[in-house]
Length: 179
Image (tube, rainbow, N blue to C red; front, side, top):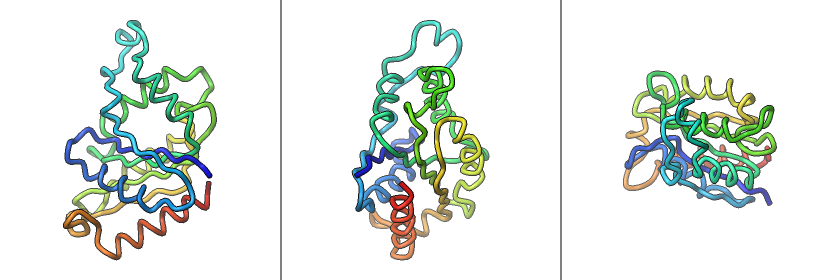
């Protein structure tokens, strides 16, 4: 049994990406899944001056947690065609924790599922393409990407519609088989 770590790259209190992560995690059947909230790992905005004060304990703790898991599910919002500054900041700190030449997400390369959603039809697909291109450099082996457009049309009363549920189930089944 593999251990999957799932999180959203959003710091919004009502994040649709947090809802997407929880829905995906509920569909894991063959492995163990842990959901974390990146807001529990509060880090200052990365900069050389900040780094000279020392690596935040939260960055060390987060990398340790990532190291203890075999795979990642990352739900990233799209801000102006790219990942949000909040998620980029976390990745920047993780890059400073890793030793040169080591993956950012732990000691070994990790299988990654990248997902995004949005109210618009694109569903964050532009950001996912960029993240998928960068992921090997960060220590991720992208097994799949999935963008869910028109979120408000597909999510109501605390859950996704039947068709979307089936899509998410198939996505997680495929990801679990790839581990």
